[in-house]
Image (cartoon, rainbow, N blue to C red; front, top):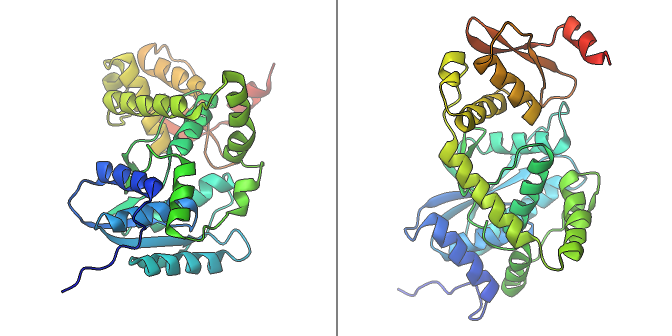
Amino acid sequence: MTSKKPFWPRTSPNFLACRVAARAVMGEQPRAIAVGLSGGADSLALTAALLAEGHEVTALCVDHGLQEGSATQARRAAEQACALGAGAEVLRVDVGKQGSVEAEARGARYRAFAPWEEVAVAHTADDQAETLLLSALRGRVAGMRERSSVEGVHVLRPLLSVRRAQTEAACAELGLEVWQDPQNQDLAFRRVALRREILPRLQEIVGGDPVPALAQAAHDAALDDALLSTHPTTDCTALAVLPEPKRRRAIAAWLREEGVEVTREAVRGIDALCTRWHGQGPVAVRSEKKGTRLEVARVGGKLSILPRSAKERSRARQP
């Protein structure tokens, strides 16, 4: 019996870097794994790396229906996966219109991944750096973990130590034709604007590539968050006895589970409902869905999310 000929060239240092990173997260024992595949450089490099490491890969190619030709691109990505030796499925999703396009598409994508036990996604060190900056602008520094749960899906991120330039070079080494997503040029998206305008400016200011330091800070923040996180609870007495870092993380985790935007001001106000209760009014919060006004109140010793009252809306408009 002859072994299958490798699809990668003998000298492929960037592809090797992707394989080494994937091996560190996945382990050396081959197993069945699904991977989110758009056809871009990152996800193609990840798919190829997992296959080269001996895993049984199923590529999940999502058609969000947001661009002309999206169905064709999803099928093309599936064909590329099959040519490499993976299985593939095209998943058509409906993207909601209540929140931002990015958030709604992400939610729809991960809900489509729900039938699979584990899904690997191709976030890189560059994505990690961007996530740190975006989260800091929202008032809470955060990073992505190698393993986490998103919309109930067990998500693996094997390429967090790999640079975007390396995945592009890896695809060139493998002779793979990479899809260039037009939305990655649209400065209306905050992440794109950060990538194309802010990070290059930061490089000029600091006199060097800012991504490694930012990605490391994001990694450290993710580790700290995992260490300090606790299971969400709404019981004010239980929250009040927790150390402040764990209490505030528990409040933030609960808000995220309920689809509420997490801001420093909101967490501080809700924290006071638990620790400095004197009958004060509710805390106004923003839903992740546009047009939905909410508030967090202490009701019967527990935190509750309620529609924001007309009285509170009027008070918020007063100078």
